[in-house]
Image (cartoon, each protein chain N blue to C red):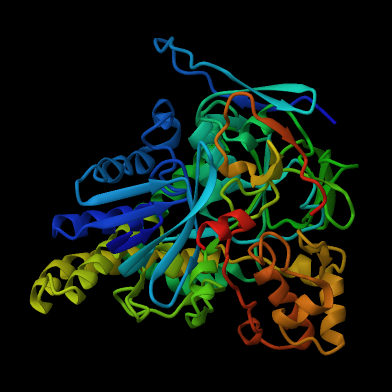
Length: 102
Length: 459
Protein backbone atom coordinates (compact mmCIF):
# COMPACT_ATOMS: atom_id res chain seq x y z
CA UNK A 1 0.00 0.00 0.00
CA UNK A 2 2.74 2.41 0.91
CA UNK A 3 4.99 4.02 -1.68
CA UNK A 4 7.64 6.67 -1.49
CA UNK A 5 5.56 9.70 -0.65
CA UNK A 6 6.91 12.47 -2.88
CA UNK A 7 5.08 14.96 -0.72
CA UNK A 8 7.48 17.14 1.26
CA UNK A 9 7.03 19.55 4.12
CA UNK A 10 8.94 22.80 3.53
CA UNK A 11 11.35 23.48 6.38
CA UNK A 12 11.11 26.80 8.26
CA UNK A 13 13.70 29.36 7.16
CA UNK A 14 16.95 29.27 9.15
CA UNK A 15 16.88 31.43 12.28
CA UNK A 16 13.54 29.96 13.24
CA UNK A 17 14.79 27.03 15.26
CA UNK A 18 11.64 26.42 17.31
CA UNK A 19 10.33 23.11 16.04
CA UNK A 20 6.73 22.45 16.93
CA UNK A 21 5.99 19.35 18.98
CA UNK A 22 5.12 16.35 16.85
CA UNK A 23 1.86 14.46 17.34
CA UNK A 24 1.39 10.77 16.76
CA UNK A 25 -1.68 9.33 15.06
CA UNK A 26 -2.39 5.64 14.62
CA UNK A 27 -3.37 4.31 11.20
CA UNK A 28 -4.00 0.64 11.98
CA UNK A 29 -0.59 -0.55 13.25
CA UNK A 30 1.30 2.30 11.66
CA UNK A 31 2.38 5.39 13.57
CA UNK A 32 1.80 8.61 11.62
CA UNK A 33 3.60 11.68 12.82
CA UNK A 34 1.89 15.06 12.41
CA UNK A 35 2.32 18.72 13.28
CA UNK A 36 -0.27 20.82 15.16
CA UNK A 37 -1.29 22.61 11.93
CA UNK A 38 -1.99 19.32 10.15
CA UNK A 39 -5.41 17.98 9.39
CA UNK A 40 -5.78 14.23 9.64
CA UNK A 41 -5.92 14.11 5.82
CA UNK A 42 -2.71 16.10 5.33
CA UNK A 43 -0.88 13.89 7.83
CA UNK A 44 -2.01 10.69 6.11
CA UNK A 45 -1.05 12.02 2.66
CA UNK A 46 2.36 13.20 3.85
CA UNK A 47 2.97 9.78 5.39
CA UNK A 48 2.48 8.24 1.95
CA UNK A 49 -0.75 6.37 2.66
CA UNK A 50 -2.26 5.56 -0.75
CA UNK A 51 -5.80 4.45 0.25
CA UNK A 52 -7.96 5.91 3.01
CA UNK A 53 -11.30 4.62 1.76
CA UNK A 54 -12.71 2.04 -0.67
CA UNK A 55 -15.24 2.93 -3.35
CA UNK A 56 -18.71 1.82 -2.26
CA UNK A 57 -19.48 0.04 -5.55
CA UNK A 58 -16.20 -1.24 -7.00
CA UNK A 59 -14.14 -1.32 -3.82
CA UNK A 60 -11.30 0.55 -5.53
CA UNK A 61 -8.97 2.71 -3.45
CA UNK A 62 -9.59 6.38 -2.78
CA UNK A 63 -7.66 9.26 -1.20
CA UNK A 64 -8.64 12.79 -0.15
CA UNK A 65 -9.31 14.83 -3.30
CA UNK A 66 -10.42 18.44 -2.59
CA UNK A 67 -9.09 19.13 0.95
CA UNK A 68 -11.83 21.71 1.55
CA UNK A 69 -14.83 19.68 2.64
CA UNK A 70 -16.63 19.37 -0.72
CA UNK A 71 -15.86 15.95 -2.16
CA UNK A 72 -16.19 13.65 0.89
CA UNK A 73 -13.52 11.33 -0.55
CA UNK A 74 -11.55 11.80 2.67
CA UNK A 75 -14.16 10.17 4.94
CA UNK A 76 -12.42 7.98 7.49
CA UNK A 77 -13.20 6.59 10.89
CA UNK A 78 -11.59 8.40 13.83
CA UNK A 79 -12.12 6.88 17.26
CA UNK A 80 -15.33 5.28 16.07
CA UNK A 81 -16.85 8.28 14.25
CA UNK A 82 -16.95 8.71 10.46
CA UNK A 83 -15.72 12.22 9.65
CA UNK A 84 -14.17 14.28 6.86
CA UNK A 85 -10.46 13.89 7.60
CA UNK A 86 -9.60 17.07 5.67
CA UNK A 87 -11.76 19.11 8.07
CA UNK A 88 -10.46 17.45 11.23
CA UNK A 89 -7.39 18.90 12.99
CA UNK A 90 -4.84 16.23 13.91
CA UNK A 91 -4.76 15.40 17.63
CA UNK A 92 -2.25 13.28 19.47
CA UNK A 93 -3.29 9.65 19.91
CA UNK A 94 -6.12 9.57 17.36
CA UNK A 95 -6.95 6.07 16.12
CA UNK A 96 -7.70 6.10 12.41
CA UNK A 97 -9.07 3.53 9.99
CA UNK A 98 -11.01 3.24 6.76
CA UNK A 99 -14.74 3.80 7.27
CA UNK A 100 -16.86 0.67 7.52
CA UNK A 101 -18.95 0.20 4.39
CA UNK A 102 -21.59 2.96 4.50
CA UNK B 1 -28.89 32.53 20.61
CA UNK B 2 -29.78 35.50 18.47
CA UNK B 3 -27.69 37.85 16.35
CA UNK B 4 -28.45 40.92 14.24
CA UNK B 5 -26.52 39.55 11.26
CA UNK B 6 -25.25 36.01 10.81
CA UNK B 7 -22.46 35.67 8.26
CA UNK B 8 -21.65 32.21 6.96
CA UNK B 9 -18.09 32.01 5.75
CA UNK B 10 -14.99 33.92 6.87
CA UNK B 11 -13.39 34.40 3.47
CA UNK B 12 -12.89 37.79 1.83
CA UNK B 13 -16.62 38.56 1.42
CA UNK B 14 -17.62 37.54 4.94
CA UNK B 15 -14.67 39.24 6.66
CA UNK B 16 -15.15 42.50 4.75
CA UNK B 17 -18.91 42.53 5.43
CA UNK B 18 -18.40 41.97 9.16
CA UNK B 19 -16.05 44.93 9.38
CA UNK B 20 -18.43 47.30 7.59
CA UNK B 21 -21.21 46.20 9.96
CA UNK B 22 -18.98 46.58 13.01
CA UNK B 23 -18.01 50.10 11.94
CA UNK B 24 -21.75 50.91 11.99
CA UNK B 25 -22.13 49.38 15.48
CA UNK B 26 -24.17 46.46 14.13
CA UNK B 27 -23.13 43.29 15.97
CA UNK B 28 -22.68 40.21 13.80
CA UNK B 29 -21.72 36.57 14.17
CA UNK B 30 -19.49 34.73 11.70
CA UNK B 31 -19.71 30.96 11.37
CA UNK B 32 -16.99 29.14 9.45
CA UNK B 33 -16.16 25.52 8.88
CA UNK B 34 -12.39 25.95 8.91
CA UNK B 35 -10.27 26.25 12.06
CA UNK B 36 -9.30 29.86 11.26
CA UNK B 37 -10.38 32.87 9.20
CA UNK B 38 -9.35 33.50 5.59
CA UNK B 39 -11.52 31.26 3.45
CA UNK B 40 -9.67 29.24 0.83
CA UNK B 41 -7.91 32.22 -0.78
CA UNK B 42 -6.41 33.58 2.47
CA UNK B 43 -6.26 30.22 4.16
CA UNK B 44 -3.94 30.15 7.21
CA UNK B 45 -2.67 33.64 6.36
CA UNK B 46 -2.27 34.46 10.05
CA UNK B 47 -1.03 31.14 11.34
CA UNK B 48 1.72 29.09 9.88
CA UNK B 49 1.42 30.64 6.46
CA UNK B 50 3.79 33.46 7.34
CA UNK B 51 7.03 31.62 6.66
CA UNK B 52 5.72 30.96 3.18
CA UNK B 53 5.24 34.67 2.50
CA UNK B 54 7.58 34.89 -0.47
CA UNK B 55 6.24 31.67 -2.01
CA UNK B 56 2.59 32.65 -1.76
CA UNK B 57 2.98 36.26 -2.81
CA UNK B 58 1.64 39.74 -2.01
CA UNK B 59 -1.99 39.09 -2.96
CA UNK B 60 -2.13 36.34 -0.37
CA UNK B 61 -0.53 38.47 2.36
CA UNK B 62 -3.16 41.15 1.68
CA UNK B 63 -5.66 38.91 3.48
CA UNK B 64 -3.98 39.62 6.81
CA UNK B 65 -5.60 42.99 7.30
CA UNK B 66 -9.05 41.41 7.03
CA UNK B 67 -8.23 38.65 9.49
CA UNK B 68 -6.77 41.19 11.95
CA UNK B 69 -9.91 43.31 11.56
CA UNK B 70 -12.06 40.52 12.99
CA UNK B 71 -10.74 41.39 16.47
CA UNK B 72 -13.62 43.79 17.19
CA UNK B 73 -16.11 43.71 20.09
CA UNK B 74 -19.07 43.68 17.69
CA UNK B 75 -17.77 40.69 15.71
CA UNK B 76 -18.30 37.23 17.20
CA UNK B 77 -16.59 34.35 15.43
CA UNK B 78 -17.17 30.59 15.61
CA UNK B 79 -14.66 28.46 13.75
CA UNK B 80 -14.74 24.73 13.12
CA UNK B 81 -18.54 24.77 12.91
CA UNK B 82 -20.52 23.09 10.18
CA UNK B 83 -23.79 24.83 9.25
CA UNK B 84 -26.24 22.28 7.87
CA UNK B 85 -29.64 23.90 7.80
CA UNK B 86 -31.14 27.36 7.30
CA UNK B 87 -34.89 27.56 7.93
CA UNK B 88 -37.31 30.03 6.30
CA UNK B 89 -37.47 31.99 9.58
CA UNK B 90 -33.67 32.49 9.43
CA UNK B 91 -32.86 29.92 12.09
CA UNK B 92 -29.41 28.51 11.45
CA UNK B 93 -28.55 25.03 12.68
CA UNK B 94 -24.94 24.03 12.97
CA UNK B 95 -22.72 21.43 14.60
CA UNK B 96 -19.61 22.09 16.59
CA UNK B 97 -17.11 19.65 18.04
CA UNK B 98 -15.83 20.11 21.58
CA UNK B 99 -14.02 17.87 24.05
CA UNK B 100 -17.23 15.94 24.71
CA UNK B 101 -18.09 15.28 21.08
CA UNK B 102 -20.03 17.02 18.33
CA UNK B 103 -23.18 18.89 19.31
CA UNK B 104 -25.84 20.73 17.33
CA UNK B 105 -26.72 24.35 18.11
CA UNK B 106 -29.13 26.95 16.75
CA UNK B 107 -28.77 30.64 16.07
CA UNK B 108 -31.46 33.02 14.87
CA UNK B 109 -30.64 36.14 12.89
CA UNK B 110 -32.40 39.28 11.66
CA UNK B 111 -30.36 39.02 8.47
CA UNK B 112 -28.26 36.22 7.02
CA UNK B 113 -25.34 36.87 4.68
CA UNK B 114 -24.02 33.84 2.85
CA UNK B 115 -20.34 34.21 2.01
CA UNK B 116 -19.83 30.58 1.19
CA UNK B 117 -17.53 31.09 -1.77
CA UNK B 118 -16.58 28.76 -4.57
CA UNK B 119 -15.55 25.20 -5.19
CA UNK B 120 -13.42 23.87 -8.01
CA UNK B 121 -15.37 22.85 -11.08
CA UNK B 122 -15.62 19.07 -11.16
CA UNK B 123 -13.23 17.90 -13.89
CA UNK B 124 -14.16 14.35 -14.80
CA UNK B 125 -11.62 12.45 -16.90
CA UNK B 126 -10.52 8.85 -17.24
CA UNK B 127 -8.97 7.58 -14.01
CA UNK B 128 -9.64 10.66 -11.88
CA UNK B 129 -10.68 8.58 -8.86
CA UNK B 130 -7.23 6.96 -8.58
CA UNK B 131 -5.26 7.78 -5.41
CA UNK B 132 -2.53 10.23 -6.41
CA UNK B 133 -4.95 12.39 -8.39
CA UNK B 134 -6.17 15.44 -6.52
CA UNK B 135 -7.26 18.95 -7.33
CA UNK B 136 -4.81 21.85 -7.70
CA UNK B 137 -6.86 23.69 -5.09
CA UNK B 138 -6.34 20.81 -2.66
CA UNK B 139 -2.58 20.87 -3.18
CA UNK B 140 -2.54 24.64 -2.73
CA UNK B 141 -4.48 24.32 0.53
CA UNK B 142 -1.78 21.94 1.80
CA UNK B 143 0.88 24.45 0.78
CA UNK B 144 -0.88 27.32 2.58
CA UNK B 145 -1.99 25.48 5.69
CA UNK B 146 0.72 22.89 6.21
CA UNK B 147 3.63 23.97 4.04
CA UNK B 148 3.41 20.67 2.17
CA UNK B 149 4.45 20.50 -1.49
CA UNK B 150 4.33 17.72 -4.08
CA UNK B 151 7.57 16.78 -5.76
CA UNK B 152 7.54 16.33 -9.55
CA UNK B 153 3.81 16.90 -9.79
CA UNK B 154 2.04 16.88 -13.14
CA UNK B 155 -0.48 19.72 -13.43
CA UNK B 156 -3.39 19.35 -15.85
CA UNK B 157 -6.45 21.31 -16.92
CA UNK B 158 -6.69 25.06 -17.27
CA UNK B 159 -7.38 28.36 -15.55
CA UNK B 160 -5.34 31.03 -13.77
CA UNK B 161 -4.91 28.85 -10.66
CA UNK B 162 -2.95 26.33 -12.70
CA UNK B 163 -0.32 28.96 -13.57
CA UNK B 164 -0.39 30.47 -10.08
CA UNK B 165 0.21 27.15 -8.37
CA UNK B 166 2.95 26.22 -10.84
CA UNK B 167 4.70 29.51 -10.10
CA UNK B 168 4.35 28.98 -6.34
CA UNK B 169 5.86 25.49 -6.65
CA UNK B 170 8.74 26.95 -8.64
CA UNK B 171 9.35 29.58 -5.94
CA UNK B 172 9.22 26.89 -3.27
CA UNK B 173 11.97 24.98 -5.09
CA UNK B 174 9.72 22.13 -6.26
CA UNK B 175 8.85 22.96 -9.88
CA UNK B 176 6.20 20.76 -11.43
CA UNK B 177 7.34 18.06 -13.82
CA UNK B 178 4.93 19.09 -16.54
CA UNK B 179 1.87 21.23 -17.30
CA UNK B 180 -0.78 19.68 -19.52
CA UNK B 181 -3.14 22.42 -20.52
CA UNK B 182 -6.57 21.77 -21.99
CA UNK B 183 -7.88 24.33 -24.49
CA UNK B 184 -11.54 24.23 -25.38
CA UNK B 185 -12.40 24.60 -29.03
CA UNK B 186 -12.11 28.20 -30.28
CA UNK B 187 -11.02 29.51 -26.88
CA UNK B 188 -9.04 32.43 -28.27
CA UNK B 189 -11.66 33.30 -30.85
CA UNK B 190 -14.32 33.42 -28.11
CA UNK B 191 -12.11 35.35 -25.73
CA UNK B 192 -10.74 38.01 -28.08
CA UNK B 193 -13.86 40.21 -28.15
CA UNK B 194 -13.53 40.50 -24.35
CA UNK B 195 -9.86 41.48 -24.45
CA UNK B 196 -10.34 45.29 -24.74
CA UNK B 197 -12.46 45.35 -21.56
CA UNK B 198 -9.88 43.20 -19.80
CA UNK B 199 -7.09 45.57 -20.81
CA UNK B 200 -9.22 48.53 -19.74
CA UNK B 201 -10.03 47.28 -16.27
CA UNK B 202 -7.78 44.37 -15.42
CA UNK B 203 -4.35 45.11 -16.81
CA UNK B 204 -2.71 44.02 -13.58
CA UNK B 205 -4.22 40.52 -13.93
CA UNK B 206 -3.14 40.11 -17.54
CA UNK B 207 0.34 41.31 -16.61
CA UNK B 208 0.51 38.87 -13.72
CA UNK B 209 -0.58 36.04 -16.01
CA UNK B 210 2.15 36.84 -18.53
CA UNK B 211 4.73 37.03 -15.76
CA UNK B 212 3.72 33.62 -14.44
CA UNK B 213 3.89 32.10 -17.93
CA UNK B 214 7.38 33.56 -18.41
CA UNK B 215 8.44 32.19 -15.04
CA UNK B 216 7.17 28.71 -15.95
CA UNK B 217 9.11 28.86 -19.20
CA UNK B 218 12.28 30.11 -17.48
CA UNK B 219 12.12 27.28 -14.98
CA UNK B 220 12.17 24.84 -17.89
CA UNK B 221 8.83 23.24 -17.02
CA UNK B 222 7.44 21.34 -20.01
CA UNK B 223 4.18 23.00 -20.94
CA UNK B 224 1.86 21.31 -23.46
CA UNK B 225 -1.08 23.39 -24.68
CA UNK B 226 -4.21 21.89 -26.11
CA UNK B 227 -3.96 18.36 -24.78
CA UNK B 228 -6.81 15.84 -25.09
CA UNK B 229 -7.69 12.40 -23.73
CA UNK B 230 -6.12 12.99 -20.32
CA UNK B 231 -5.97 9.63 -18.54
CA UNK B 232 -4.70 8.66 -15.11
CA UNK B 233 -3.32 5.13 -15.15
CA UNK B 234 -2.36 2.70 -12.41
CA UNK B 235 -3.34 -0.52 -10.76
CA UNK B 236 -4.97 0.79 -7.61
CA UNK B 237 -3.11 4.11 -7.45
CA UNK B 238 -1.60 6.56 -9.91
CA UNK B 239 1.48 5.44 -11.75
CA UNK B 240 1.28 7.03 -15.18
CA UNK B 241 -0.45 9.87 -17.01
CA UNK B 242 -1.41 9.54 -20.66
CA UNK B 243 -2.45 12.37 -22.98
CA UNK B 244 -2.63 13.30 -26.63
CA UNK B 245 -0.93 16.41 -27.96
CA UNK B 246 -0.91 17.38 -31.66
CA UNK B 247 -2.15 13.91 -32.55
CA UNK B 248 0.62 12.13 -30.67
CA UNK B 249 -0.13 10.06 -27.57
CA UNK B 250 2.42 10.15 -24.77
CA UNK B 251 2.63 8.32 -21.45
CA UNK B 252 4.69 9.65 -18.58
CA UNK B 253 5.47 8.42 -15.09
CA UNK B 254 3.74 10.34 -12.29
CA UNK B 255 2.72 9.82 -8.68
CA UNK B 256 0.92 13.15 -8.25
CA UNK B 257 -1.47 14.48 -10.85
CA UNK B 258 -3.08 17.78 -9.86
CA UNK B 259 -6.07 18.84 -11.90
CA UNK B 260 -8.09 22.03 -12.20
CA UNK B 261 -10.70 23.45 -14.50
CA UNK B 262 -11.70 26.75 -12.92
CA UNK B 263 -14.06 27.44 -10.04
CA UNK B 264 -17.85 27.66 -9.72
CA UNK B 265 -20.15 29.10 -7.04
CA UNK B 266 -20.87 26.79 -4.14
CA UNK B 267 -24.67 26.63 -4.39
CA UNK B 268 -25.48 23.95 -1.77
CA UNK B 269 -26.86 26.49 0.74
CA UNK B 270 -28.78 28.65 -1.69
CA UNK B 271 -30.33 25.58 -3.31
CA UNK B 272 -31.29 24.04 0.04
CA UNK B 273 -32.99 27.37 0.89
CA UNK B 274 -35.12 27.21 -2.24
CA UNK B 275 -33.54 30.26 -3.90
CA UNK B 276 -33.98 30.54 -7.70
CA UNK B 277 -30.80 29.88 -9.68
CA UNK B 278 -29.89 31.22 -13.08
CA UNK B 279 -27.46 29.82 -15.63
CA UNK B 280 -24.48 32.06 -16.36
CA UNK B 281 -23.52 31.13 -19.94
CA UNK B 282 -20.12 32.86 -19.84
CA UNK B 283 -19.07 31.28 -16.55
CA UNK B 284 -20.88 28.04 -17.48
CA UNK B 285 -22.28 27.64 -13.99
CA UNK B 286 -25.42 28.19 -11.93
CA UNK B 287 -25.66 31.15 -9.61
CA UNK B 288 -28.37 32.26 -7.16
CA UNK B 289 -30.73 35.02 -8.20
CA UNK B 290 -29.86 38.18 -6.27
CA UNK B 291 -29.90 41.94 -6.87
CA UNK B 292 -26.84 44.19 -7.08
CA UNK B 293 -26.61 44.30 -3.26
CA UNK B 294 -26.64 40.52 -3.08
CA UNK B 295 -30.20 40.61 -1.71
CA UNK B 296 -32.02 37.32 -2.39
CA UNK B 297 -35.18 38.43 -0.54
CA UNK B 298 -36.55 37.50 2.90
CA UNK B 299 -33.54 39.12 4.63
CA UNK B 300 -31.10 36.74 3.01
CA UNK B 301 -28.05 38.03 1.20
CA UNK B 302 -25.17 36.52 -0.72
CA UNK B 303 -21.76 38.07 -1.43
CA UNK B 304 -18.56 36.93 -3.09
CA UNK B 305 -17.83 33.99 -5.36
CA UNK B 306 -20.95 32.15 -4.17
CA UNK B 307 -22.98 34.72 -6.12
CA UNK B 308 -20.88 34.36 -9.32
CA UNK B 309 -17.12 34.11 -9.71
CA UNK B 310 -15.30 37.45 -9.37
CA UNK B 311 -12.22 36.69 -7.26
CA UNK B 312 -11.07 37.87 -3.84
CA UNK B 313 -11.03 41.65 -4.36
CA UNK B 314 -14.49 41.61 -5.95
CA UNK B 315 -15.71 39.49 -3.02
CA UNK B 316 -14.38 42.02 -0.50
CA UNK B 317 -16.21 44.82 -2.30
CA UNK B 318 -19.43 42.80 -2.64
CA UNK B 319 -19.34 41.93 1.06
CA UNK B 320 -19.12 45.60 1.98
CA UNK B 321 -21.99 46.47 -0.38
CA UNK B 322 -24.22 43.78 1.14
CA UNK B 323 -23.36 45.07 4.61
CA UNK B 324 -24.41 48.62 3.65
CA UNK B 325 -27.77 47.43 2.33
CA UNK B 326 -28.34 45.28 5.42
CA UNK B 327 -27.58 48.35 7.55
CA UNK B 328 -30.11 50.29 5.49
CA UNK B 329 -32.77 47.60 5.92
CA UNK B 330 -32.08 47.59 9.66
CA UNK B 331 -32.63 51.36 9.64
CA UNK B 332 -29.10 52.20 10.70
CA UNK B 333 -28.33 53.99 7.43
CA UNK B 334 -30.66 56.20 5.38
CA UNK B 335 -30.84 55.56 1.68
CA UNK B 336 -28.59 58.56 1.11
CA UNK B 337 -26.01 57.47 3.66
CA UNK B 338 -25.98 54.00 2.13
CA UNK B 339 -25.41 55.39 -1.35
CA UNK B 340 -22.59 57.68 -0.26
CA UNK B 341 -20.79 54.66 1.11
CA UNK B 342 -21.68 52.41 -1.81
CA UNK B 343 -20.71 54.57 -4.78
CA UNK B 344 -16.91 54.22 -4.58
CA UNK B 345 -17.28 50.49 -3.88
CA UNK B 346 -19.57 49.98 -6.88
CA UNK B 347 -17.15 51.85 -9.09
CA UNK B 348 -14.24 49.68 -7.96
CA UNK B 349 -16.30 46.52 -8.33
CA UNK B 350 -17.26 47.35 -11.93
CA UNK B 351 -13.58 47.87 -12.75
CA UNK B 352 -12.55 44.74 -10.89
CA UNK B 353 -14.97 42.57 -12.89
CA UNK B 354 -13.83 43.85 -16.31
CA UNK B 355 -11.26 41.10 -16.75
CA UNK B 356 -13.74 38.29 -16.00
CA UNK B 357 -15.40 37.68 -19.38
CA UNK B 358 -12.00 37.41 -21.03
CA UNK B 359 -10.70 34.94 -18.44
CA UNK B 360 -13.96 32.99 -18.33
CA UNK B 361 -14.03 32.46 -22.10
CA UNK B 362 -10.28 31.90 -22.58
CA UNK B 363 -10.20 29.35 -19.73
CA UNK B 364 -13.58 27.80 -20.41
CA UNK B 365 -13.93 24.18 -19.32
CA UNK B 366 -13.33 21.58 -22.01
CA UNK B 367 -16.01 18.89 -21.86
CA UNK B 368 -15.13 17.21 -25.17
CA UNK B 369 -13.41 14.19 -23.58
CA UNK B 370 -16.18 13.32 -21.16
CA UNK B 371 -18.74 13.78 -23.95
CA UNK B 372 -16.89 11.44 -26.32
CA UNK B 373 -15.85 8.70 -23.88
CA UNK B 374 -18.52 6.55 -22.21
CA UNK B 375 -16.14 5.13 -19.61
CA UNK B 376 -15.44 8.25 -17.57
CA UNK B 377 -16.66 8.19 -13.98
CA UNK B 378 -18.93 11.20 -13.49
CA UNK B 379 -20.30 10.50 -9.99
CA UNK B 380 -17.37 9.48 -7.82
CA UNK B 381 -19.45 8.54 -4.76
CA UNK B 382 -21.87 6.15 -6.48
CA UNK B 383 -19.57 5.31 -9.41
CA UNK B 384 -21.82 6.35 -12.29
CA UNK B 385 -20.14 6.72 -15.68
CA UNK B 386 -20.84 9.07 -18.58
CA UNK B 387 -22.09 6.08 -20.59
CA UNK B 388 -24.57 5.07 -17.87
CA UNK B 389 -25.96 8.63 -17.82
CA UNK B 390 -26.37 8.57 -21.61
CA UNK B 391 -28.20 5.31 -21.28
CA UNK B 392 -30.63 6.86 -18.79
CA UNK B 393 -31.25 9.77 -21.15
CA UNK B 394 -32.04 7.33 -23.96
CA UNK B 395 -34.59 5.66 -21.66
CA UNK B 396 -36.31 9.00 -21.11
CA UNK B 397 -34.42 10.45 -18.15
CA UNK B 398 -34.74 14.22 -18.53
CA UNK B 399 -32.74 15.70 -15.67
CA UNK B 400 -30.65 15.15 -12.59
CA UNK B 401 -33.50 14.36 -10.20
CA UNK B 402 -34.55 11.50 -12.42
CA UNK B 403 -31.02 10.21 -12.94
CA UNK B 404 -30.84 9.74 -9.17
CA UNK B 405 -33.63 7.19 -9.44
CA UNK B 406 -31.91 5.47 -12.37
CA UNK B 407 -28.47 5.16 -10.81
CA UNK B 408 -28.11 7.01 -7.46
CA UNK B 409 -25.99 9.60 -9.36
CA UNK B 410 -25.54 12.50 -6.92
CA UNK B 411 -26.91 10.63 -3.91
CA UNK B 412 -23.61 9.80 -2.21
CA UNK B 413 -21.96 11.74 0.61
CA UNK B 414 -20.95 14.71 -1.59
CA UNK B 415 -24.60 15.28 -2.61
CA UNK B 416 -23.82 16.16 -6.20
CA UNK B 417 -21.05 18.67 -5.52
CA UNK B 418 -18.59 16.63 -7.60
CA UNK B 419 -20.90 15.38 -10.36
CA UNK B 420 -23.84 17.76 -10.80
CA UNK B 421 -22.47 19.98 -13.56
CA UNK B 422 -20.80 17.17 -15.52
CA UNK B 423 -23.84 14.92 -15.30
CA UNK B 424 -26.06 17.77 -16.53
CA UNK B 425 -23.67 18.33 -19.43
CA UNK B 426 -23.80 14.64 -20.44
CA UNK B 427 -27.62 14.48 -20.23
CA UNK B 428 -27.90 17.71 -22.22
CA UNK B 429 -25.57 16.36 -24.91
CA UNK B 430 -27.50 13.11 -25.27
CA UNK B 431 -30.85 14.95 -25.36
CA UNK B 432 -29.53 17.61 -27.75
CA UNK B 433 -30.52 20.53 -25.52
CA UNK B 434 -28.60 23.28 -23.76
CA UNK B 435 -27.28 22.41 -20.31
CA UNK B 436 -29.33 25.27 -18.83
CA UNK B 437 -32.45 23.25 -19.68
CA UNK B 438 -31.38 20.36 -17.46
CA UNK B 439 -33.12 20.42 -14.11
CA UNK B 440 -30.52 20.63 -11.33
CA UNK B 441 -30.72 18.33 -8.30
CA UNK B 442 -32.94 19.34 -5.43
CA UNK B 443 -30.59 19.92 -2.50
CA UNK B 444 -32.08 19.43 0.93
CA UNK B 445 -30.90 19.98 4.50
CA UNK B 446 -28.89 18.66 6.20
CA UNK B 447 -26.34 19.79 3.65
CA UNK B 448 -23.57 18.11 5.67
CA UNK B 449 -24.04 14.65 7.20
CA UNK B 450 -25.15 14.72 10.86
CA UNK B 451 -25.50 12.00 13.47
CA UNK B 452 -28.75 11.03 15.18
CA UNK B 453 -27.17 12.32 18.38
CA UNK B 454 -26.81 15.77 16.84
CA UNK B 455 -30.48 15.72 15.81
CA UNK B 456 -31.43 14.57 19.32
CA UNK B 457 -29.50 17.53 20.81
CA UNK B 458 -32.13 19.82 19.31
CA UNK B 459 -35.12 18.01 20.82
